[in-house]
Length: 181
Image 1 (cartoon, one colour):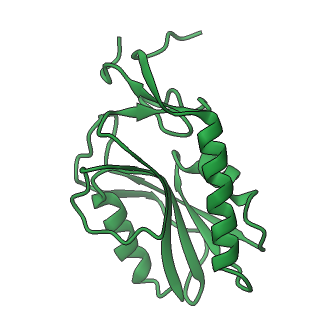
Image 2: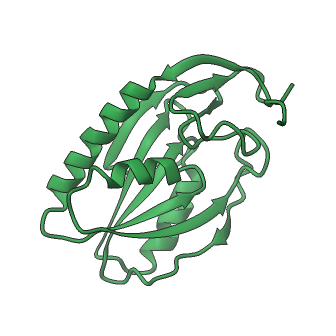
Image 3: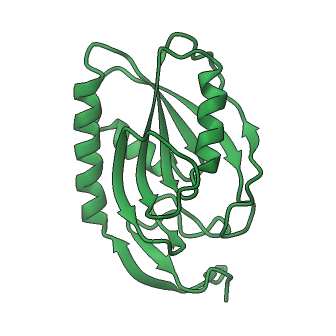
């Protein structure tokens, strides 16, 4: 087995806190989208864990689609250059779209993605993120559903990774060095 990269520091959000917040967000989305069939767009890979759990708490017919975008590469800070690695499989024209994101850091990548999706003429376009870093946003965003505000530290767990590791943790923790061993 390969050695872990970096050292885990303090737990920022526990598994129980995440579970409770995901249930609350699911109930709120169910209420807000009553009578509609939203398309949940998952931003891969990090939001996949959140999407899976969140969707089980939304009591509506749903459709999923997936996008992969990159602005980090293997770094711990965004490069500011956004690349679409995987586009949607289906058209969203006239659909109620909810972008499911794991974390908002600077907001630049999400801002780019929202402009890109808006050009495809959805009936509505909203964002649900589980985590948002306080004081880090460089783009003005209107996030309708937000789970937790966290500090600026580099965090891993619950889908968030460092060099593709730690996504499987059920909680969110600080990665001590963020540069590996």
